[in-house]
Image 1 (cartoon, rainbow, N blue to C red):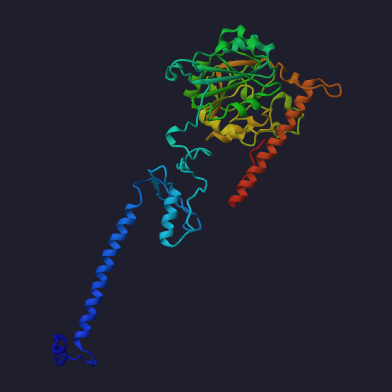
Image 2 (tube, rainbow, N blue to C red):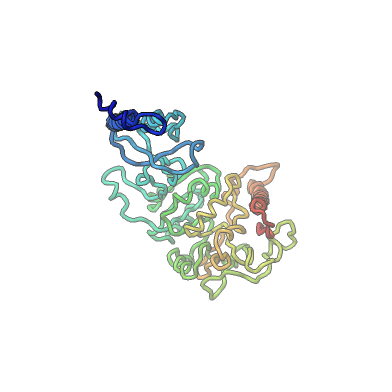
Length: 431
């Protein structure tokens, strides 16, 4: 007699089923669980062993799958297995083959993506990126680390024609070895300047019949001039007998000027009241004088009206474009204000005050170091004769038109900004 039969005679459940049947079924289920677990462990081991070891770098998933966030992805140490293949395999196991790695064109040889790098350099490791440069000259031989023995702290630029070489020679000698010398040649003549010893270590850039603001926009990008504490952007027709660049900068620092110019000798030529040199003064930052003589009877230009605010141009926060000096930070702002197509720069002198705060304290004229504006129309003579008019008349007409165009652009840009912010614009300060 079987054990099961005996038990069936003694044990009957409430449903009329034998207890032996229930016990046997539970035993079979336990066996299945144990076998399934064992098989799962073995399968998982072999699946895991089939993938190589990887390190954590960065993962990008498509925006349709998850919000745009930076995650970590597995970067393959095995050159033969790409990150995309790893994720395709993972997707297949999950039953979702729509997952892809972004950016789509990221190849197995370029898996770096650093959004904080400069635009266009996102694929480079940050340690190799050099976003800034300079005008320091290097040798063609030897160790690069030994090329630059002196790194100049300041930059001075002159836009020149060869006919003004004696004037420029005198001016350059007023700047110490702490200055990099950069000449922009509007007449195409460069090699002739080697008659001056300093010219052999200067930087020469040549483009015929171009202005200094055309050059400045294209060759003085803030990232190029970043090593220099101050940038002088000067005309070629300045008398510098009473000027010393190092002494000038001492006063600039002493009085906290971010944008400045040397005082203009009022006995030589016509200038704005604000930029006239004041006797017995180191620096001045404003003026209460009347409008310049050339404004009398002129009503078309907004500049030829009494100052509505003593802290605004042309009574304060104002320098002329003939001999401005910018700090590194101020120039970064001013450079972005310069328009590509408005090459004469008229109107900039009334607007640079937007780049420093408070402008009436950080813009000023250095009286103790002054220059003479000789008013030589050298670049103006590079214009073309039209209807019998002198070349410089066409250039002057273009200057006036550019001033109006710049003013209109600035006014419209301010209005557009305030409108986009949903607030009423204040009165425009464009002049």
